[in-house]
Amino acid sequence: MLKIENVSYSVGNKRILDGINLEVQRGTIHSILGANGTGKTTLGYVIMGLSGYKVTEGKIYFEGEDITDLSITERARRGITLAWQYSTPFEGITVKDYLSIAARQSGYDYNEALKRVGLDPTKHLHRNYDETLSGGERKRIELAAIIAMRPKLAILDEPDSGIDALSMENIAHVISSMRKDGTTVLLISHNYKVAQIADLSSTLCNGKILITGNPDKVAEFFESQCEECNHVNNPIIDRITNLKS
Image (cartoon, rainbow, N blue to C red; front, side, top):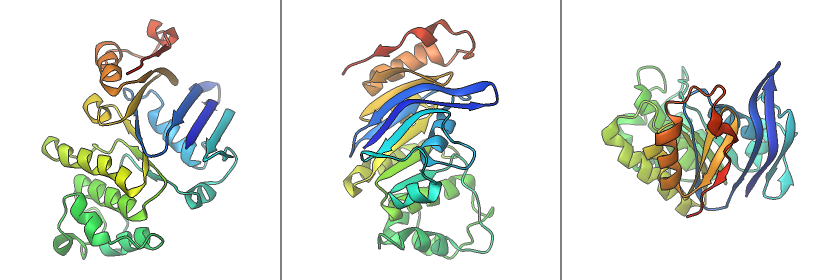
């Protein structure tokens, strides 16, 4: 479904992404695992086509179409959406307004979407979607909006951000269930336990994909060799390995 060929992205003389090659198969969850500052969020922004995140080199294909030069609006029309790491509150609209907009095209029941992320519609729909909601509540509501949209590809940037440990099991179950809705998921996280819910996982370090393969094996590699890395002059950067399940 999504194919990234030799994609690089630079800001000035600093290369943030360096020759990324990645394929995400339809109907799967593919996790991108990496410590903070390794380029994970930038990769999500480049795929989504956010302003200022135009690839320096390489191509991005979605369902066989070259979308490298398409705008964020055109990519959204093709079924790509992004859930931000930090959910932005919106003054003047209710949770119901926010979810109604998300469900407009799909017709999905936003009440059901809220229930799926563990929130009670009777308690949340008429609340304002602003800073009176906790970060965790906004994160869940944003995930409910993604469910209601029923996109072809959902890029989830740190979906566990602001979510307490006890709730993470529910969120992981929700993400897994999105496949049944026909949504392919690109899951971005620095938490190897979250990344392990994927069908396939890749480790990103210093803007490079180091390994791609079985999520458990990739998580083991990350835990043992990446978490303490400072991403500068790291000898494992040149060890590109293909881990097979």
